Length: 328
Image (cartoon, rainbow, N blue to C red; front, side, top):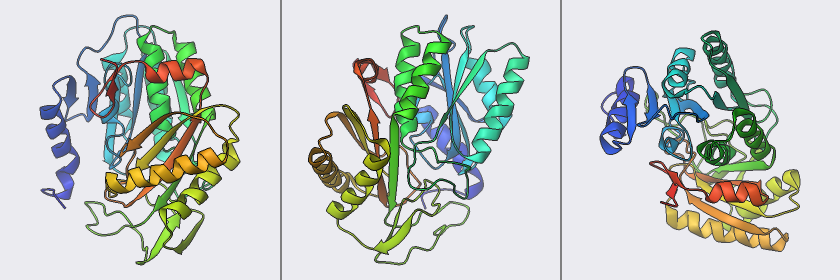
């Protein structure tokens, strides 16, 4: 692993991020990342966060058109409430704050406590839970569906609305609409290795894959012998479509888990597009790359979000973050 010691891996990464992106204010000691111009007067602020190891989620999505602040926890560990409260205080301008929370038990509890603490200080808080993973109903870390790739869609579309000056109630409503319109399914070709463990976090024998894996390596639906990209796309996209049942165009995210090269992701995207064409699903936009990762796990996930004209317009709106930028 390209680290010093496991105990400082998150702090070291934050120092490197601060050096690379001067448009961000990175508080290494308190583990808070905010956009340099925060708070933006009259603007609803978006704050998200979660365990480190999923980069660029969430810190890489801080900037105009997306998040105002992010709170990185330890690897695969929720940020603590004090972090979230500090982030909210740093970005709040009087228009309220939207918390975007992935459905993992630690995240849900800690963001809930942070919301209560912030509201005690007079800050208006709204919270949207992301629970888009169709692979399993419950997992090692969740009650209900896990929050995965749709987090990017929620943060981008709600962030664009906030950037345009939409009030808190509207930003929250759009975020809920995006989550309800999104579904995801992930596949692991190898296990991930955490800095603390220094080796694989679960056992996945050579020549096998995990269908429906979670972003922390949680078990999915089943294990099978290795499949081709075509076979994986048939299974994963089919699972998403059978649950989402879209009646209009979609945005497609073909996401790498951290250890799969773009050459393979682009090839897999060709198979995803084939399945969508065969199922008569119109694709309005496509995004391919590593956005919601699991350290060095080889594999991928597919997320589809059904969009109307308004959601698509907000998706296309300018964004300027380390990991996502267009329109400027």
